[in-house]
Image (cartoon, rainbow over all chains, first blue to last red; front, side, top):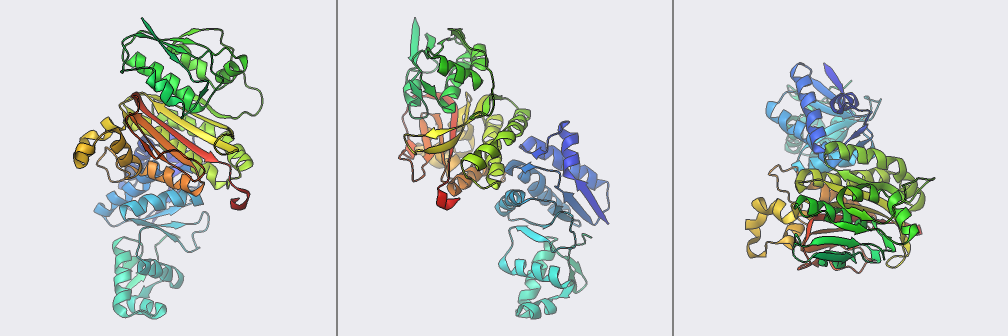
Length: 182
Length: 300
């Protein structure tokens, strides 16, 4: 099950104004709390955070909303988090804060959940290549990935396991599937 | 006895030291008169410096200072239009006729002098600036459209520093003008100033030990701007200034921060400022200036 959370709605409810700019740490922390409350009541497999109503996203808010949510969720485990509807400058802000924390998240283009997701934040070149390969090929074993990328098996296993631990692909027995987003 | 502090005829970040030096030890014991009669021009940095001085004197519970307004009608009108007198009247006993602020058509003032007291004010500032920033940054300065959003992000982060670290309120103003002397081009200038505790006191408990004998206003500025440290233990903190630096590097911009008795600048090739100045006259709080110049035709 996919649970879509529209960040623009949460922002309007939280600051009780028509603002479309997601700025300041207190605002970001309040939005993150609302997301966590919503997710606590849901048994969804994927949380799809939709930023398409957001105009500006500053670093403080990117840190509070996305990085801290991933850090908290990492401890709790189990759920996939995917971002949707980000513009280029918002990608940049999120990429910056995630790199700072050594985190990564998948982002999908607005209105096109069938397009390949983009990996934002910190990941090794092998993990990035494996992520792209899984998105392009669909469910793969480590052997199939290694063959597709011309790697030895251990390298494929390591890259896929790194993605699975960070919930950027879904481990399913010996196969690794793209994130369930559609 | 009254101490008279003359406002420099051209009041910007360079002539600021003359203004700051006029106060002597801080807070001054005498009644203060700020004499702006001879002022011919003030940058946003200069306007905020005067308000910050007034605010700091009020917070130090000193006698309400006097302020004589500029003699020039043009200067008075411009300062009024930038919103200066609206707040100066709250902090100073004004002497001289002050014109009413009137707006007529597009202006070089992107953001009037605006108080920053709380998170909501930062939201207001970002909302207000987004309306005029694109016209100036893209239309006049030749920056790419996405620069408008980065500019708003930089402004947001700079204003948040007041709310998060100053321990009191502050001010922000944004203006476009031509930098004839130093650059010969149009620039947009963001000025942010507060009368708070300053960088040294804000960072002292978390970082002074590491610097040992070197700890002071200059070291605190280096720690914040160059090393990206924050007083908070939260590892996500301290990224705002790092982003502003990166943004400015891309557009050959400049940032300078003055706090206490020191001033640190990231100096672009077009400027001849010194990176670090120490042992300056004390001035309360922190004063930030960000300059973004019009781009060369070949970089557009």
